[in-house]
Length: 441
Image (tube, rainbow, N blue to C red; front, side, top):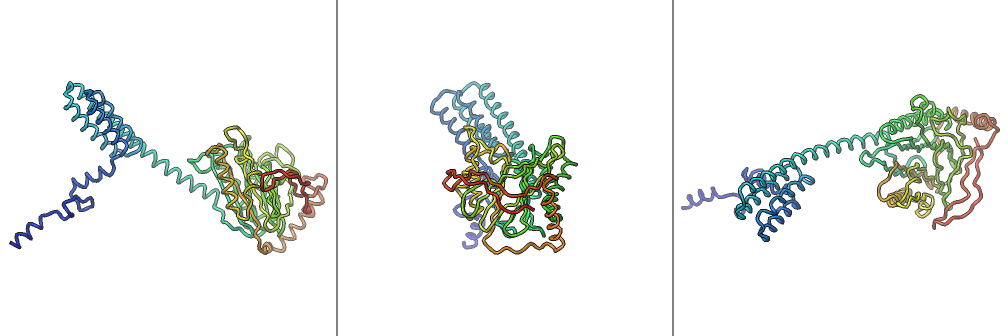
């Protein structure tokens, strides 16, 4: 008896209480049924059962049965082909059962089931094509993201004596990359950075941005003079740009403690946030044309000297920020909004400003927008590791520029100027005299 009992027990299913298992060891039919039920769309199934319920309760013959095709059609927008076929099979089974119950004409039932089968197959094909397009789009976006990291390399939070924060939003959100550019490079001549905006959008703008950043990274390390860095970018663009292309940019250098060098080539003026409070725009003494257009205007850029002490901050941005409009067509007031969020944390300031910018435009920017905030740390700064020869060369070139002036004109000291109207932390306007200090180089 015990042996027979053991033999009988050996033929019992191993899962508890006779429930089917969905794992790899389960029988093939049950495993397939479990997989099908797992991929069954919920909303389309509820629609199918709802239509069947109305048909049963209303007792209106086969009036409701053609609407069963809405189930697989809806499943195609959210599920894969397997889910569409599951919903189509369920709809066909319910339609056949209700058609037989209603005892309608056979040709009408055949027409309904044929239409349901056609809709199911077409929906399954559409679902397969949608899935393929989604996979291709995901691959393209991953390539675009890799290209963005190659062109716009991630910037660490600390570069030399500065804390840096960056926010970038491309107008083509699917591509995640556009024509705005930025870079921060530590060099033997001090930390140097650039923020610029390429005319146009799309791949041509990305190519120009990559060209500008490549030349800047190389020239910033090689050239002891910041104007020479700008000159190399200008010469490179003159050989590669089309007749209608140009790049607006601000190039900044930090050659020695307490000073920043600024060269503005047709770009929006940076915003200075002193440690003492307030926000003001740094205006160029002699505005220069954008990069790539110097041949049209015989006006070389001039070097501006900006005092920059511990705790001071400098915000550089692109036109996509200040030209962003709300539904009432009002521009985004960047200076006022920055004044509301001034703190010692650059990341906090840019996060708040970026969120307000998106809220201002309703969640979607119509142009590329970049924000880069530079803050001098409250620590003793080491002297740049330039060679004595480079230092002597810089001093000699500074003396020549001071004697000759910019572009051979009358000598004009390069100083920093800010607008007379600035903003307090509460957003109110205050009036201050024109800010001008620092000897020109």
